[in-house]
Length: 156
Image 1: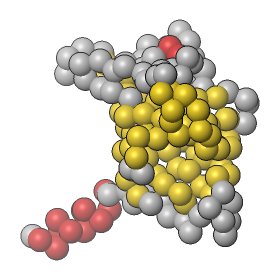
Image 2: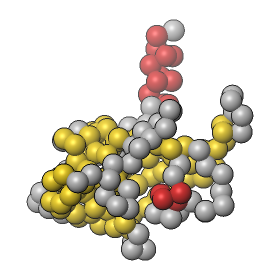
Image 3: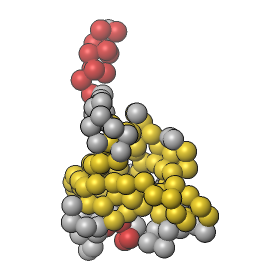
Image 4: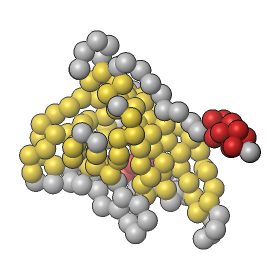
């Protein structure tokens, strides 16, 4: 019985991507804000209640210099209190950089992600393991009763 359990566990667990140049892998589930739809390639008219994010940040090979990112996202619509529907999955890629700037009126380390189509989102680095999404005015985004905008490091 335990062999079967471990076999099923091995089959169904998704192991995050590893690379010597991976700066970090961050994940979160956030509300579906209209501010994020363009960057995440979610059609404006689509029903969307939740976004599941996986963010991979890579350094330039052999250095500690930020280079590329890849976001894998899926968005979900709640049909009713018991049923949710995956409305679509996409991958967004581009370049990222670290800046010193202002977030919510205070000095902060900011990670800026620019997709290949030129769209930009920014995160405030709270510490080495936590990022918080910023709105277009560089203020911390505020979640709702179910979800927030803080991303946790899953893997280094």
